[in-house]
Image (tube, rainbow, N blue to C red; front, side, top):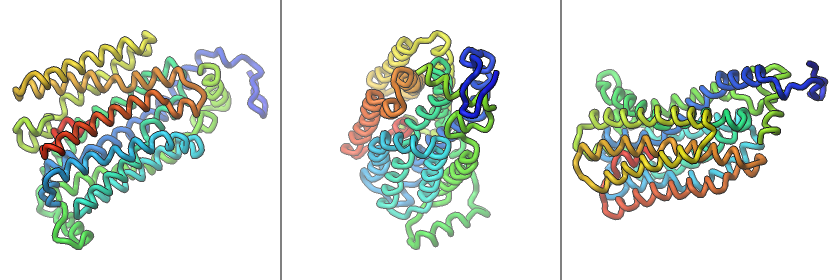
Length: 392
């Protein structure tokens, strides 16, 4: 089998199942782990404001009334508005460079949140965080669709997306560990924050560490990923010349918890089980979807399970029922998103059409509007947002 200087095939590589399998496994090994980690960090940096709140953020910044809820909600403004334009930029810059750059940007913003001294600073950081994370979700979908065939894509999208519920479990455990560190020997964090802010008002070590540590980790991981993720199959150094050609051309052919009354540490630990269950459900449903080559029926099942959870929310105020509903909502809602995005990604072409994923973006907009309206309802009633809303 020969390939000339212009990468024209002299044999029939398009029907080489062994090479197809080899390409898929190499992409799984060299691309998926980085995408998984970046998406995990995206959700941790997005939701760590909830853990910081438990550790005293509102008291540190002297937030009053609805100020925390406003800071929580503004994240989605630029997150939604910049999503589609960011997908167009990805085409020009290249996903292997653009996605790590986005992660570096939000990691820097997340780290700076540990040094905020006022409500205005907190809102500004949340806006910037939303702007930096806005292109990540759609960008990952487009990026993976460049490397996997349609009936291999769902399971890989499920693997990356299950980092979202896992982030709730991992973030809660990390925040619990940071909160248990004694002040002795660590006062430098507090004094540095005080000098930086030049104000008597600053985040204490417990709440500042949530931002400093998690943001710093994101920056370091993104810097390493920048040098390992390829932009396209044709530039993937882990593929041979024959594999690069086939990898590129085959795609052308196949076109609520703190409110239950628990202490801060207990509340953080209680976020772990429902999120970890959702992680397992996303992984399992994605694998099954690719095997049976069906999306719609699994989406319907997910919606039904989530609906049961929301009915439980409306029907009872019992602490046990309120906690149990989080399992149904997480297990039902999380799998639906990767199933829908795989469904649309399989049926939209070419790149700029898939970059818009128009109808899916409409559904995502409605989902973010749901979160926005839900938080806004609490703002208008001057009530704190329940912890499960912080994970949305």
